[in-house]
Length: 198
Image (cartoon, rainbow, N blue to C red; front, side, top):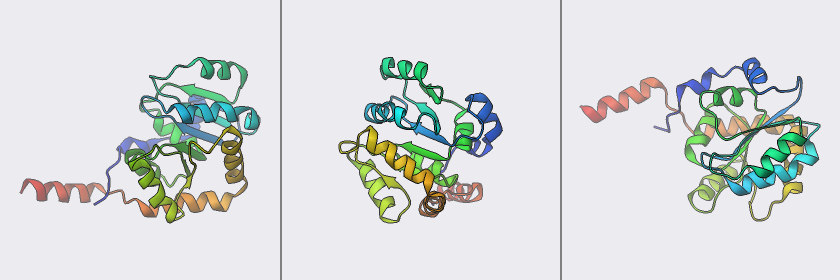
């Protein structure tokens, strides 16, 4: 059947996203998802990478409500390109709409939403089932996977820069991810529900 997604993610508007996040006109956008409680290593990699591409891209960063924000607040004051938030609610749909590349962990819920939107994704999975998710998608050339222990800010920035230089590769990643993770239609969900309650 596949994994259902929140319907409002399809209602994101790029223009509204540019206004809400105060993005600079014409700049490519990287969306970095730290998760609800924050992925400390992902946050560290991004902050370390900011000096290497601050002038080239705008960065929307969800750093998680439970993570110490000292370095993040310092980076926000220093880099006009950097837009950190502890979390987003419905505005996440606009963040998805403006994002040219999405970076995050490899939880199935988020992956399914990104697949539904055909977004090119860079995964930095946690050890365990997320690594299995990431490996399965990497084997089908649907995502770029980085090892959080072997990656530093320079390497992270280099991979992002390469993806922005390779438009066709970004499009292919989004297309393959969309093909790999089936998002059920409302009629499919209704059919399964009727079967379960029959």
